[in-house]
Image 1 (cartoon, rainbow, N blue to C red):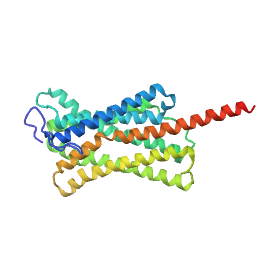
Image 2: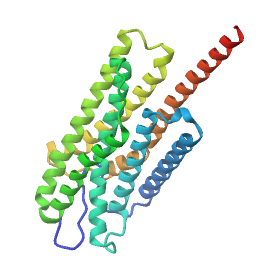
Image 3: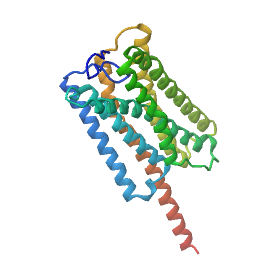
Image 4: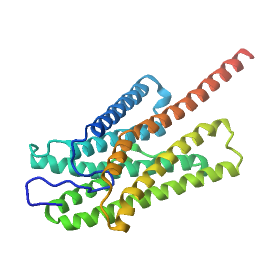
Length: 285
């Protein structure tokens, strides 16, 4: 990092950002990922407006993850390809801090989603529902200091900033995602042990858990490949590899949308079945 000028020299500050380049194919793919993410988010909003069954906790958490991913990916893209030189200093600091905060908020939201699935399959009789307003405030209150510290260290202590990114921030994300993966393994184990994997009520939940598990596992592999191996070997991150993972990140909303549809489809099927049963019982009276 070079802090001698008014703008930061952004180079591999996290698991997803590398040297600013003008690589057109990467830019196009990245922008396509952002566009697809925004489209998926708009589709979720349309579902919320038109279909009452979609206004449940699972879907709302997924919408939060989707929105936060769009924010993080957009900030990430601007940091790598934006015209930083002509941008005011305070805006650079804001975007840079928002990237770190939103990136960590995604991890927190995924953990919240995992906990909600865990309660459905493992705890079963847990009747408490998370207050999403409280959860949202809590997650951003936890995540914001990561962005503030990142901006402060980059401006005033560049050497500590590198340590902060490579050891504190990255390893903490990796540990949380690994813990998240272990929870999913527990969910699968309990479902199979109870012989409920073929249950109509749990089939969509298990499909959801499987897709989410793959998404989290991919994130763990990304962190492992681009950061932890680089830390151990003491070498620079491979620029092409890092940018490839950036593009993968920009399309993370696609599996989230798949999860959203799986959950919604299962709930609508249950709702239709329940309605038909009530109608038939009324006819038989």
